[in-house]
Length: 254
Image (tube, rainbow, N blue to C red; front, side, top):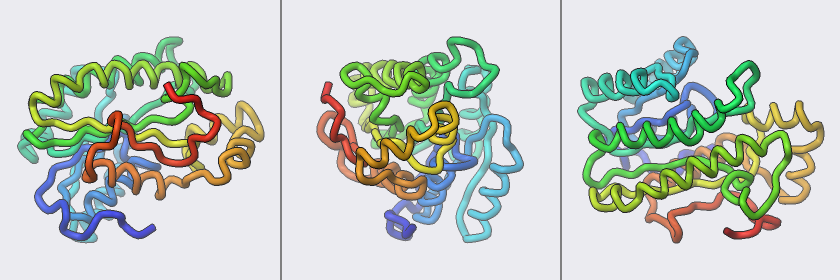
């Protein structure tokens, strides 16, 4: 897909995208780098994959570093920010893309730990690094954003509720962010074809993704959704601080 950001439009900007060694995060960080930003590729345990992406960005003339961090571990997150401060001196854009909760072998409350508690800790720790006109983007799904008024698939409900709890907790920080000139945007998308979440849902509930595609008429793919996230970091903040991507028919507004 063509980069939605103009070449050179982010020259000098410093960008962190969490969970960016693959999928939506990787495509998003690629768009930022191609627009001239100095990017941070964050990963939890796939260092080689993150480095491969960084190498491809630098080979194309961009600037990228990789920083591993477990977002549920505040000490690990602090080390990540220490590295960013040493390398870039701060941040202008923070994209909170990393999420989860459907993985096997995790604690019963892992979804809430990652999608709410860790997100609040991440943003709280990031604020001192953010420039006066910085932008923070939180990535979620319609199934999570509307969970209080529209039921979702049972297999996804714990994740959806934890993502909504995270969104609510981050929105509570908006007055503090506004006072510092930092703008906050939620990007809510329908199910995205080709993501790990979609694969896990399809495995748990065969036919779920195709059924949602039939109902919506179209589902965005990874690159298309990443483009919308990149745009959310530079375009004016929308009403209610929410950028909707994809069809919202069938979802009851909160």
